[in-house]
Image (tube, rainbow, N blue to C red):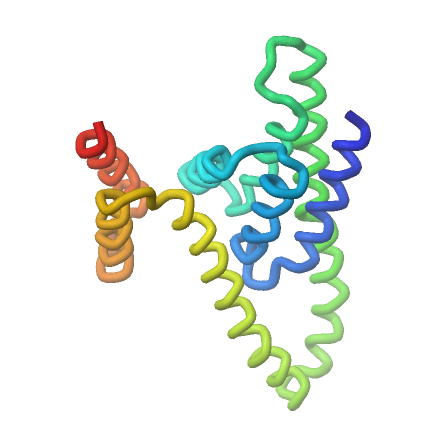
Length: 186
C-alpha cells in the first residue's frame, strides 16, 4: 500500500506542475496513468469518476481524490481499507494543489517584474495554443469512452451545441442527457 501512496504522490505532484490552464489539461496524462500504466481502473470507470467529479460541487480537480480512492481499494468492507483510501485521497489532494501553489507563488513574483515585456507576451502566446490542445485532448479522451454509438453521439453533439449557444446550466443538460440515454438505450 505504501508504494501506492508514493505513486499517487509522485503522479499528482507531476500533474500539478504541468496543469497549465487548469486541471482538465492534465486529464489525458491522468487517464493514461490510472488506466493504462497502473491499471487502477478501466476506461469506463475513469469516465464515471470524471462525470461524478464534474457533477459534484467543488474544484474541477475533484477527480484526483476519486482516482486515489479507487487506487487504494475503496470501497471495501474493511475499516482498514477505508482509512487507507482516505489517506490516499488526502495525499492526492495535497500532491495536486501544493506543488502548483508553491510554483505560482514563485513565478508570480517574477511575472510582475517582466509584465509587458516581450518575454512575458511570448510566454502567454505560447501557453494559449498549448492549453487549448491539452483541453481538446481531454475532450477526446472523455468522448472516446462516452460516445458508444449513434444515439450517444447525437446526444453528445446536441449537448455541445446547447452548452455553446445557451446559458442553460450544464448540470441540467447532463440530467436530461442521462434521462434520454436511459430511455433510448434500454
